[in-house]
Image 1 (cartoon, helix red, strand yellow):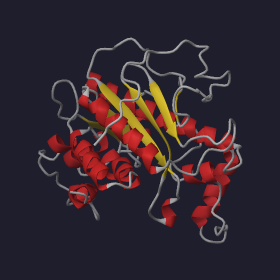
Image 2 (cartoon, one colour):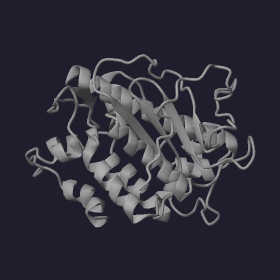
Image 3 (tube, helix red, strand yellow):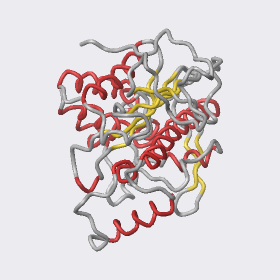
Length: 318
């Protein structure tokens, strides 16, 4: 399989090379694929190498609401290496400033997957939050190719998902927002949530109405609070900001855990908690390594989430 190395030897460009516009949004670059953009996100890591494990954080957003079922599609994604460059991924623009495509096509998704696989091969451990049971599975689905799906399943087993390690260790997961707040490294984009992203990106499904259920009413009110019209380029730019911030927050949280050896957070009950994860070589465990942890006591839970449920898709593509 041909795996793409899109930016292997590329250095950080000068500020006026057209990669970033005055408003901080992606701009057209004639000499590279228009659907792949590098964007300097406010507060990203400086380009100088930092101590600690080499990693690349990633996150993606789906283009179809959960309520509508699979295939979810991928509207956009973000990757960020531990030592600097951040990349936003989305479908090719039809015209400058026009609304972006509903979803990335299979070739574009394969380019994203190839980039992650290539970075892992170069020594950058891929890191995601709840990525084993969501992002990686969606990525495999949207490649629309069995060979790619198998490669992504292999990557999934070798990457680091702190949320899955917590599940293996404690029997439950902790939200990225809670982890970021507990560690004092930041929060997600204010007002945005993963369930809003498909609607913000593509607009409201034509057959949805407020009288469907309370969830639709809640989402409509939340989007109005954001101050954008769902499905417009302005709204899509907000989604790009959101996915970029999630990748950055994942990177910040992971680095903080590696540096401090613990992750404090406040539970829904208001009780403070601290996770002290098992680590190796200054990093958290990969999915394969996490599976070697003893099963936690979940007898106090009514419906504990099982490791096998999160892993099921990786077995299905073998």
